[in-house]
Amino acid sequence: MAKIVPFRALRYSLTRISDPARVMAPPYDVISPSLQDALYHRDPFNVVRLILGKTTDEDSGSNNRYTRAAADFRLWEQEGVLVRDTMPSIYLYDQLYRTEDGQTVNRKGFIALARLEDFSSGVVKPHEKTLSGPKTDRLQLTRACRANFSPIFSLYSDPCCVLEFFTKKVKERPGDLEVSDDDGVVHRLWQVTDPAIIEKAQGVLDSKPLFIADGHHRYETALNYRNEMREKHPDFTGKELFNYVLMYFANMEDQGMSIFPTHRLVHSLESFQVEPFLGRLREFFDIEAVPADPADPSARRTLREGLARRGAEKRVLGLFCGGRTFYYLTIRDEALMDRFFDARAPKALRTLDVSILHRLILESILQITPEAQEAQTNLKYIKNFDEPFEQVENGNAQLAFLMNPTRMSEVRDVANAGEKMPQKSTYFYPKLLSGLVINKIVEGETAE
Image 1: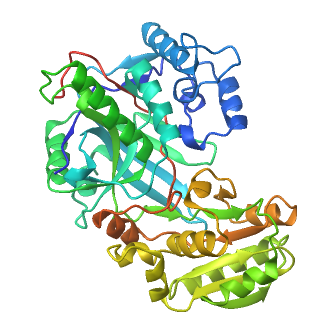
Image 2: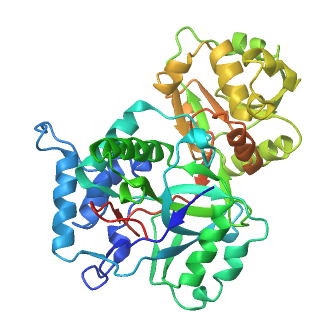
């Protein structure tokens, strides 16, 4: 099944970088233009210049965000800002964070290289759909820099938590690196060169498939880059570094694992009226209207708790259309979803909250096509539970759909069935930090 190998990571030199937190960044796809600008100004060596460089009106085929990233990457290594470890290693990676209810938890995992496998092999299983634009962007960056700057987030299942037990001793010493990000998440990294631990990690993963939690676009990009390189090197052995990708591995049974929901805003619908829309919803849903003050944090918290409580028993969505009323939408019969899917589609996909929203409400009732959804013509995604209320109240959106998080078992069941959820079905929190370790794809080198 999954094959992993240690590698010699490029890491920021702690003698050159006095405050490593200033050179880290979240994954490229959650960096807004304002955050990009802030990271640029935070430190001249911030990894954002590599993972998401700025564009200019003067960009050309020979001078653009990708060529500038490659130039910075070479220069930083030449100047000793980035230094490559001498020993092949895996890197234990803990993240301490607060949950929405205020508890501090620790998500544990490790970083290594994973051998790239086509999805058809069943070794690596995606669970979300991807778009062509981000894959083209990431492929251009990989071609220019020949490196993986951010690990793909993967999951495996081990109820016995073998690695967690086996690496306890390592974590009795302080981490080789500890930084806090802008959300207050504490990231700790330990380099491990001990062959016994590396072999144990390889043994645990050798019998298991991997589920991609985050980084679908980057994984498909790595496959495309591998295929390009294999065409250039028809005598490849399979051991070349381009056959592997930087990956973070976490046990889905880990108590520190959290999936947050992503809420939806609907906007720019022509001739939209709330009452006829509610009438159409009543054909499929039991609708419970409750009073709500959208400006009151306590009231919003009560609505979120009510959504979670109802969602523990049935398929329930939250709906806010403005004013001082909130609606809980409970589908009357999950079998209603059969008409919106091919008969071969598994129940695990048909009855997801996000499937009910996208197929039944967005496509069938509101007539927002899948193409319009992907282009976000009438759709916007929001992580925070509070912001959708504000967006509807100030007229930036017509409707807000508030979601419960997708369950881990649902991610596993849909991926095992070979299906994919709608985009933004899962938000694994916290995000992995970019800049902790970099995998340089060195031509001529092979995996250990």
